[in-house]
Image (tube, rainbow, N blue to C red; front, side, top):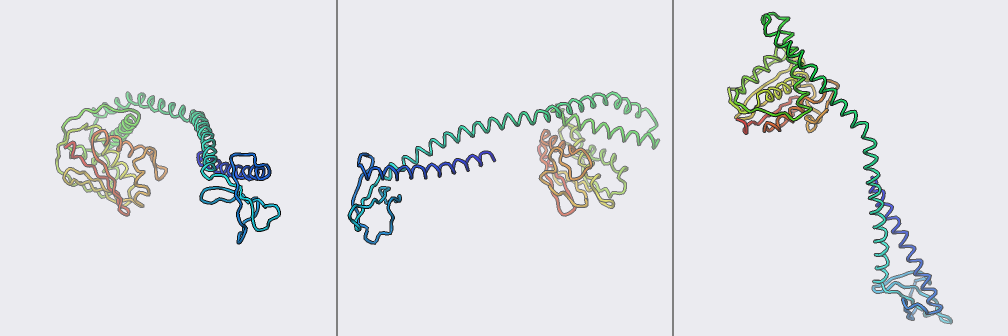
Length: 328
């Protein structure tokens, strides 16, 4: 916006300067017609027959700019005081160069001030983000010990007890959220190993299906050995299924299928996704639920694990495709 404003000013002042140059030339030509003491100009006598031009107005032809001055004691002829057109263009060019230098100087000053102002305005925001990051790191660190203790002790308790099972699932959910926040804050080092894709997917399905038993679950995948980080891959499936469950309909479905090396997770929804191109952006949400980082973490982990991801939205059906041809 600042540059557009400066360009507008530059154009306006150029027009003003051009008018000023034209007026100066007209005055100097008038003086020349009286004293003939300026070697920049020359004169000629022209006929006024059939001419509608007025005296002391600036005109131009193919070679010169000129004015007409009345010739004493003659109504048929006039004095033509002219100035070479190429020299006139040089005057305008020098004016352009002078204004352009001023424009560049003002642009540099404007950009410099804008950068300083941006740093000044964004400084509190940057400090707030740093404090938030430190706060999240402290939470992750403080949660790690009690969460590990809960999970270890739950394994030693009666697995058939429904209350214990519910507590275990809640602890696993908190653990996965902790891992998500950890993945969001730093670049993880992945350990690639071979594992069965079906086992990871089925483990996550077994975790979500009881909590969302009103959904119709359909899993149609075969055992497939891939070489990647199993924990990171599990977080991808966890976040995709979590998103598919939270934004599903009351009588909806979740379909997980495998075609070749492409794993697809499809789910019904009320309105699909309004902005599919923004779905995996950080902090993007289409309503007030969630933090807006789950799908962004999917995007981040897919890039780090060499998994090609794509999103397909048809009416109220949302499908995420994971092409794992590079890790099979």
